Image (cartoon, rainbow, N blue to C red; front, side, top):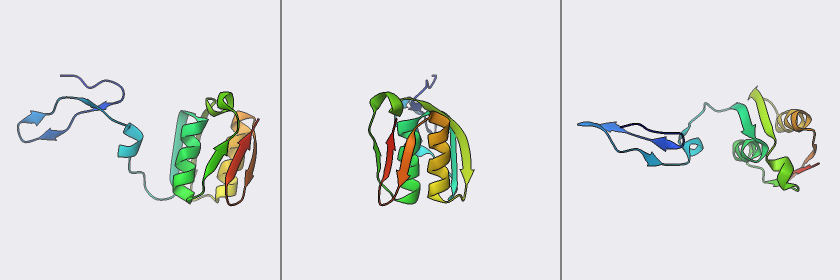
Length: 103
């Protein structure tokens, strides 16, 4: 039995379970204050930033949302994280009660 990308298998008792499709990102439990992105779509990266800092995100352009981000942050202020991510993808960002991202 082989688990493919986007699937997990659990080991309990008699051996591994049948692979099942899951949102793998929801299974990851990174230490507090650590964000790691490797060729991550902007939309997913900012979803994680929003969750980590409890700030909603609005991306105004679907093509922009698909651009990828490779970066890591450890205990950085939200403004620094968002500014760096936006520089990587060539976007304009504002951080207030909402993170707004535009081309």
